Length: 410
Image 1 (cartoon, one colour):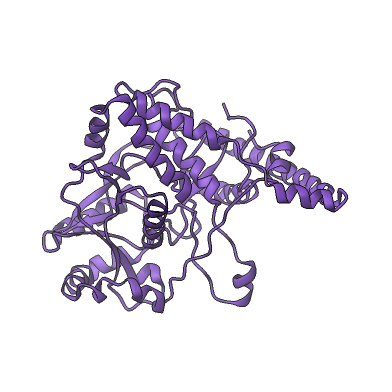
Image 2 (tube, helix red, strand yellow; image 1 turned 180 degrees about the horizontal axis):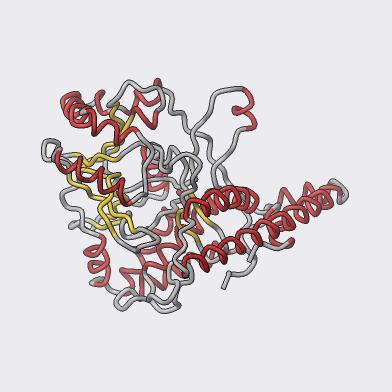
């Protein structure tokens, strides 16, 4: 169901915080190069990635074709790399080792993460979502923006006086390309005491109810203040010493890269609001700590996983505090001072957007139904589906950005 006129109109009066774009020019990236800190380690990683076939894999946009993933995996494993990431194919439901995160025995202290474009040109990669119809999606430079997001999380934690462990993240230049996504990768410091996602969950279960609530409160504070979208036990872990660690820091749309030109300086695109990303992030972690049911990634079960009752209870309380956005008093006051003219303009904007999104939503639903029917009959129209649907999805999510539904979807 698409947002209504009321959803659009209310969204024009919500409090939203947007972050400035990140500078990824060569001069700025140079400040975060591993070479400036550890020249020997940087040279070693450059050498590992400099081999022609490896360099080609790392420089090109990530692919989600199972055939190409397998081919890349064969090349990388022959070169001594271990693949640490996994992906599940949406059509076959097959889980396969993915090549975006690697390690190599010659660089035992570092994990290597690609800086390549997250999606092939023209495609659209969805991220987590919540029960208010809000969807996160990855941008081309999300992989490189891990460094800036790690710095943001460190500052948020420091301001909140919450002790967290953030692995050191640095850039390594491995080609002479001009585009940052083809030139740099991100290396992440290994933490020997880091628990796995499963071990983290089990460690939380060992804590008392009050200890679980206190832990959930700390994690929730950083998610809310930082605008962390992809909040799960895969990315938020505990160490053997009980420390909270944030190990993967892709901003998933919260941060964007600055573009040259006067127009972009003053009127350029902006990322998602901190508030929206916080709602999605908290909902994601809440869903992961809930009992699974049907569509558990979207609609969380009210009951916690066994042993996570205190953790789940606190997360639910924190999510409910922010699920309904706050109204901006200055926006309302400005509308009143305008003698109602701003109210009228906003009403027209809301009406137009509601109608346009309803039309786009209807088209997407129609194509989805046709695609599902053809799939049942063994007709493969995947490429045609992408061609038709991706432009519609881009338009739809551009219109509904910052427009959570008044009531949870169901």
